[in-house]
Each structure stands twice: as structure tokens, then as C-alpha cells.
Length: 190
Ligand code: C5P
Ligand code: MG
Image 1: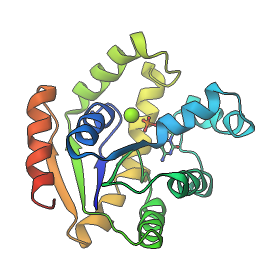
Image 2 (image 1 turned 180 degrees about the horizontal axis):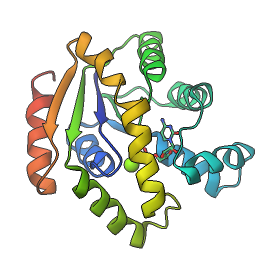
Image 3 (image 1 turned 45 degrees about the vertical axis):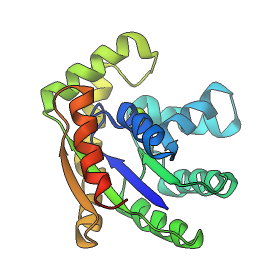
């Protein structure tokens, strides 16, 4: 099994690249952000709870998001592996992910961390906001999301560095250039 975490701040290209990697390596692309947005769109009870967090640019509490991912993974057919996009977002989520993987008799193969200049992130998200319809792609919320990333999400990097699973990737440039860099890293653990 090849289990990849695609990591990085909002706007770093996790979704775009995650889809391409899933296709190339035959992985399931699991985007927790997409799972949450689906709950909201279909007006589930759960959706009404998480909407406020997303609109404010905050993280959904660990127990909630871990619960959603856990039940999603239980239903996922066994395949060649998974690419996780948008999860983990905290150290506790990283620990839980390791436990979930071991329950499924597998483990994380690599974390690729997309490093992108801050101004580029803001530009990309604001541009995406013109067409995405995402309530959290507006300038005020983007600032908050970048802050949350620095304070709550980035510390999770240490967890993977300590386990020799961490690779930093230059996330500036064209989609194709970044994809080539990601594949080069993933090919070392495939
Ligand atoms: O991953 P993505 O950027 O699509 O996530 C959008 C929003 O979903 C985040 O800003 C956050 O509010 C919420 N989210 C979360 N916990 C996760 C993933 C996403 O709270 N693990
Ligand atoms: Mg995304």
C-alpha cells in the first residue's frame, strides 16, 4: 500500500496535486474539506454543525473530524492506497491517523509538504474565490486560515520528521513542475 499525506497551507495546491497523484498511482483521494462541504451541501445535521467553523476559517474539533474520517475509511474499498488531502490538521489528528492506519493493517508511507510563498497563497485563494463559491475563500477568512495553519497545523510536521516520513517540496511554479517534484519524492517510497 502507498499512503501519502499531501500537506501545506491553504492555497498550496493540495487538492489540485492530490487529484493528479491519485490518478497516476491509482490511489483513493480523500479530501476531508470536500467531505465536510458535502455534509453542508446536503444539509445533514452534521453539516449545520460544521458550517460555522468553516465559514470562520477555524478547524472543526478533532473528535468530530476524526470520527468522520474513521467512518469514511471503514467504508472505503481496499485499494492500492490513499492520498490524504487536508488531514491531519493538528498533532492529535496525526496521532489518530497512525492509529487508524494500523487498524487497517497499513501505515503512512510519506508526507509531502508543499512550501509556497505567502503572497502567492493569498493570490491563489482570492483568485479561486472568484469561481469556487467557497464561503471561506474571501480575504478576511484567508488571513484567519493562514493563522490557524501556522498555529495549529504546522506543528504536526514534527510528528512526521521524527518518523522520517517528511519531505519538503517547492510548491511554487507551474502545476506540471510541482507535480514532477512530488512524483520524484513519492517514487522513492513506492
Ligand atoms: O482542506 P480544505 O482547505 O478544503 O478545508 C476547508 C476547511 O474545512 C478548513 O478551513 C476547516 O475549516 C475545515 N477542515 C477542518 N479540519 C480538517 C479539514 C478541513 O476543520 N481536517
Ligand atoms: Mg483543498
